[in-house]
Length: 352
Image 1 (cartoon, rainbow, N blue to C red):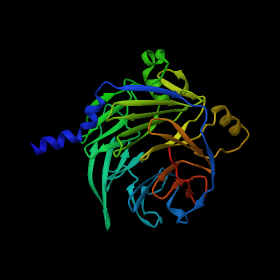
Image 2 (cartoon, one colour):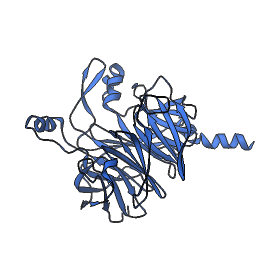
Image 3 (cartoon, one colour):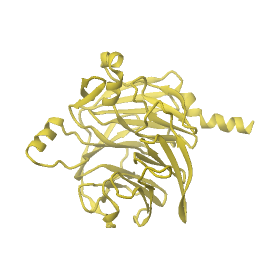
Image 4 (tube, rainbow, N blue to C red):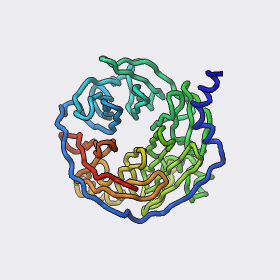
């Protein structure tokens, strides 16, 4: 009986996701307040990094995903002082090595990494030394590019077939179910060009088990999706730049319009996103004139858990990844455009 109850609790989010869902859509044009933030640099050994793309924090530790590091994709630090501990996720094509580093997540004290090329999740545990404790192959029918763990036994990845929005996976890497649909008003693309539509709607995702909120932020356009998987309520929030814009070439989506969100975090009471907002025409003009556009976004948008716009932060630099430390009123971010790429921003407390 105890085993049965344990299994049921682990899969409660999936059972809720099966219920009839209530959904609403909100259009926003601006934020009630806008605050400029100045960065402070954390001095560390920059030889470690080539392209620090993501930072994930748990307790006294932080992991940074480096997309182009010569040796290891992932680097473990103490937090918040950022003292370097070790690198892991070695690059290479042997069975024990990684072809790619695509995402990294904390699940309790365990670090999970995603290698999309190998369709593999790997689990690491740090106790004096870092040890690989488990590897999971992901279903051959999908190619995961982003992952969010619901609990130690189940996780979610976006569905890029266009059939649904999310694939819910079990510990064995098998699809348990698919849920939701892309919240587009382009019904023609939904029925005739689903794979291209799903490419255009490629999103970064995050989940917070404390409030059962799953969020997806589009890489093109300006759409944020917030799903309360316990209460089966979804909120679709669309900004002035609208849905992802694209042109179809065969079964592929060619981006147009703007570059949208660059990262997302579901906090205790708010959802945070990095916003870019530059058009592909502007990028083309910069390239033609021989100029380089900084990587990342210069804005952080803050929304309530129901999608209400609360605040916009305007940064003095561009960032790719971030961690909002709500207990310290601080943002830790990665700035790949500078020799010292780890920066912090102090933020005023937010009461919504």
